[in-house]
Structures are given as structure tokens and as C-alpha cells.
Image 1 (cartoon, rainbow, N blue to C red):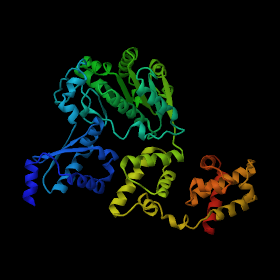
Image 2: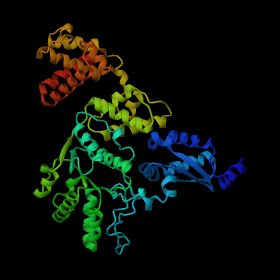
Image 3: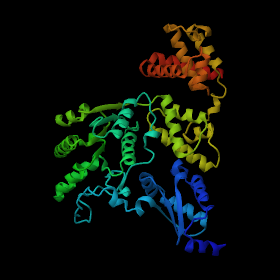
Image 4: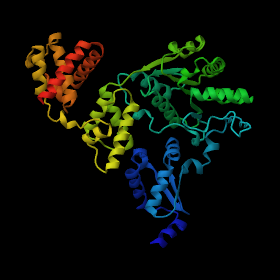
Length: 482
């Protein structure tokens, strides 16, 4: 057996058909967090001389594999073969056809940077791809995540304008909305949309020069180039692109010389009809110590806000991320995560990763009880499994002096709508009923009505202490009866 494996490694140029499924199965079992559904599209080319070559058609996928997955694929290949194996990711179509020279024959590349006394580049972007690098035909330099595409972005009430504008910009760069400025809190999808634009443009126009970076990177590079006398190279880099995408532009605040440079860069790109996309945690007019002329230019195009996702959108976000990872979770777990993590998509993704890792560690399927344990909550059986909608209605109708038939009617008087909304809020919190089931019980209302009722109660709890005390009292009585 050892002899045949060694012979295969040293001489064979076509991979064993049984080996590739074993590699993928190992990755899903041992490293589920890095697995993506598009792994099925990868094509093993050969296993020759101890090197496993894997064809990747998408340059962004290739970047993800090289930076995030190379070690895990090597581990899986060695486990499957029982031999020392290295892994390389290649694109046969582009590399064999001399793609670098054929796709961009007329575009000059930026001048090579000099290096300072420490051997560090004075004009190149930092080596950390997380901070941003420019697209110049070399897919090794892309910092863009393959997860951040328009197909995986969940379009909801809080981000509809920003999403539609991003798609328009990707389809008509420099024409639709220029500049486009997206603002909102942390983890609400700004970076997803920025990278979605880049991903879409790379697919439709691989030769386009896309520079995607953080504002902090722009500032750092500007200072380095001023000190190193490399401003000509710096300006060439940033003013000779087709698309400039800058994340967290608010970090320009208070930096007069950098603002001056960015002002001229913006003007040159804008007048050349090159697309500019910016993001920030606040609208231009609210960034302190930002020059008025920059504020004015940032508002020339479209300014779109992104707000916190509602419950239904959070559920859709979770399901989208599960699809990207190629895994499944029960609906009650998805609803539990969406109800617990109500701030942003990053919290939702963190909860998914924690639950997925816990399931892998325990060696079992994902359940609601396990999800509660993974996220540090008490087991759900103490109340949720015993509390019924009838318990809730009994206490609420008694407290508000109304009848169930009134709650189930179409009446919209405050004396009826308030207890109805409280019933829905308690039902969502204290039972495992779905939004549809709760709405059906109260006169056949749809899930959006239930969601509105829940949000109304949540908002009032934050603003009305007396109301909050009443709800605490009712919730306590419901728990005691259960």
C-alpha cells in the first residue's frame, strides 16, 4: 500500500477520483468554518511529485483559498493520502494563456516603489491584505472576500436604497451615482456592499483597475510617501484607477494635508468619470473637522443610510450565511439567534460560528438546547416548553380587562391594540411559536403585523418605565403559572 501511494505521488499526473471527495469530507468535518458551498466547483488537476494542483476559475475565490484555506487543504490532502503533500491553487485558463499580458496590454502599471532603510516599501500598500490593496490585474493582491457578493446580501427595509444603488454603480460605474456614499453603524453591511461592487466589477470587467482600501491605509501611505519623497508614485497609484473604494472615510477628519491630497485625487477621478465609493459611520455633514469642500463633494452623488435589521431580515441574514457555509440549522435555532442578536450581521455571524464550533466539539447535531449552551443562556425548557399562548392570554386579558374575542377581532382602538401587541410580544419571547402561528391565533394576522407589534412593544419598553414595569409583572405571572 505504501509503495503504491509513493508511486502515485511521484509519477501520477491525474488525481485519484476517490481522493478528492475524501479531502472535501475531511474539511467539512474538521474545519467547517472555512468551508464554502462553492468548494464543489473546484477541480483537482493532478497530484504529481507530492503537489496537489487545484483549478480555481474565480480570482476572488483563489485569493480566499490561498490566504484562508491553504493550510487546511494541505492537512486534508495529507490525511487522505497518508503522505506529505503540498497544495497549490491555479487558474489553468488564464495562466496558460498568458493572462497578465493579454488582459491589460495598454495600461501602464504603477512605478516600482523604492524602499527605506528598514527594507520596507515607501509607496506600496501594507503587506496586510486586511487593510487593503489595489487591483491591478494580479489576483494575489485582492483583499476582497468571496462571501461578499450581491447574491448573499440580504435586502431589507433598513438597507434597500444602499443595496439598489450599489447594484447600479456596479453595472454603470462612473455614471449611475458618483460618488456613492454609504453610512451606518458597525456590522450593518457597508463592507459587504463595497466588496459586492468590487466582486461584480471583477466578474464583468477583469481588466478594470479597482483600488479597495481603508481610509487609514490611505492616510498611512500618504505620510510614508511624503517622508520618502514618493508623491509622484503615490498620485499615480490612486489617480490612475477606474474605481476607488474607500472604507471608513471618517478617518480623514482632522488631517489637513491628507484631506488636501484626497480632495485633488477625488477631483481628478471625478472629472475623468471614474467611480468613487465611500463608506463611513456617519453622514458627511456630521463628520467633525472635515473640510466643507470635501463634505460638499461627498454629497454630490448619492448618500445612503443603512440601519439595524429587523427580525425578519436577521432571520434571512442567518439563512444566507448558512447557505454560504453549506450547512443547515433547525428553524428554532435560527429564530433563537435572530431574537438574541439584534444589533448587526457580525453578531449574527459570530453566534453562528460559536454554535457551529460547539456542535463540532460535542460531536452532535445542532439543537436549540445546545445553541443556548453555546451562547451562554440557560436551557430553554424551563419556560418555553411549558408556557402556552393560553397562559399568556389569560393574564393579559385579566390585566387589561378585555376579552379574547376582542383581541382576535379587527378592532384597532388603543384599548384593544395595546393588549394584543403585548400578547404577541410575550408569545414571541415565552413560547416557541412562529410569527405565522402567533398571527394566526390573533385573528389571522400575517407575520409582518406580529413583527410590528413586537417592535412597538420593544420601543415603548425603552421609553416608558411604567409600561416596562407592567410588562415585567405580566411576564413574571406568566412564568409562575407555567
